[in-house]
Length: 268
Image (cartoon, rainbow, N blue to C red; front, side):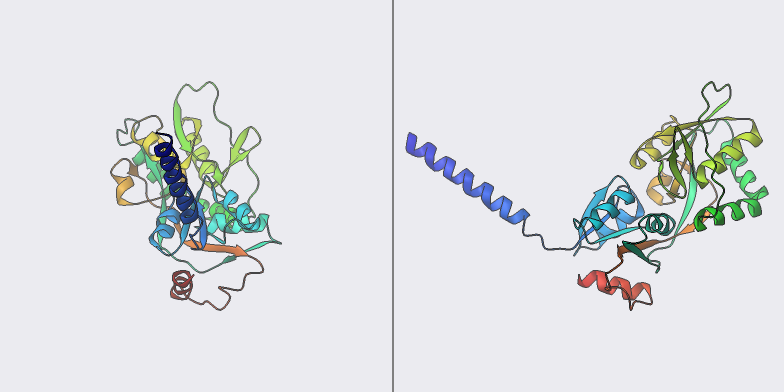
């Protein structure tokens, strides 16, 4: 009986060691992205890479600086904002890998007429909003902290994930970013009290879709799957995915096109 137990334990030990060895043999290049974003879908489609999920792209970049991953793929505007934060250590490969449009998500049971009102607001203030957006993207905007209403009488509940500058971010006990400033302006024009519901990015579409929030303002890219759960406003920003790498990394320095970058990613 003891012999059988010993053999069984030996078999288990061999299996465990084999599993550990196999897990450590993944020599694919590790590439980070924010969970639930287009960056995740794009990276996971590149089968030769070792995808690494993060709550936000800033954490991924910090891990890259620490040597835990090799590259980060994220949207161009936050990529540039993050790169400015770590200007001595990282750089953006400014070549677009995707084409996508940001929209606001709207509760499909829209009893407040938000879809019509929001689209009208964006159209009526098109030039003003474009100037504001340019300032945020270029980092020249006037800092404005947006606060969630504490005693709302006519609430507009807005779901956001405040970890995606320059579109949404935390600022002290309030929030900042282009999306939230637009929501603040919209609420003031239509007499709503802005209530900000902060959550993980992955939760926003579900939260808005089931009516817990009226609007999702989180640099959301329109896609068919999300459109099954929520309505979408007109688009307000043309985005693309880009690579962030260490400043000393010359891998992509000679790239001129998307195809050049993707050829390197495929060969990593």
